[in-house]
Image 1 (cartoon, rainbow, N blue to C red):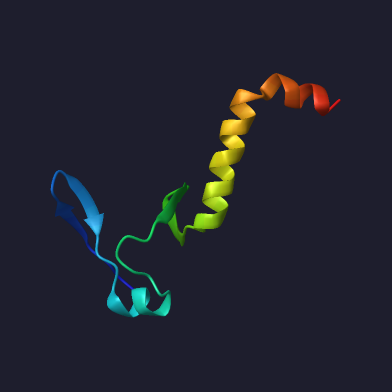
Image 2: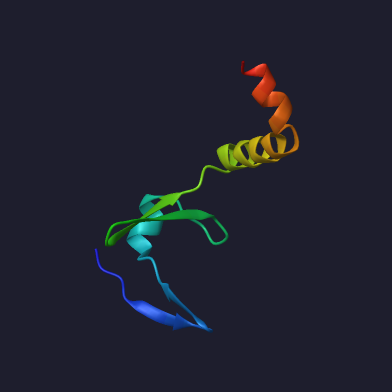
Length: 73
């Protein structure tokens, strides 16, 4: 499958082919995760439940880092 990089406003972007978005049940507004791996990129669907949990963990860890460190001993 091939996609072309295009200008979108002041940014660059790609348009995902309809056959791909249909196969993955992607809709406008869905969030994707992009990871650079060497000279390639990996794009995956973002698990919103996990993303919310991870953000809550980061906030908790930042607020209670010292307490969590003590509890881990």
